[in-house]
Length: 97
Image (cartoon, rainbow, N blue to C red):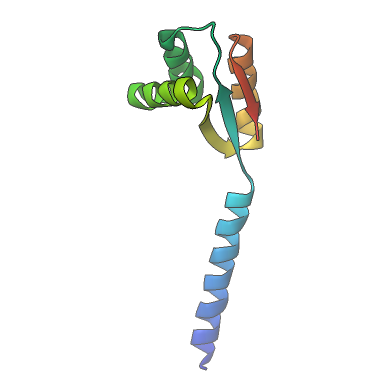
């Protein structure tokens, strides 16, 4: 193997490790179904707090309703903590996993 090939291989391995590390550090906010809030309330909350588009918020709301829960936001823990707290303050049931 030439030195250039070895360097390229090391560079590729480092990129793979960096990508894996980013994936490992990702968490999710899980939103749970309740019998209290309207669809519109949940949709508006997801748009405001999780930066969803209308379509994303609608899809997540239907999944929560029919499946009982849905991952509504993925990201780093520090970012998700405040978002999850805001959802809880609105009376929604959510947790970070």
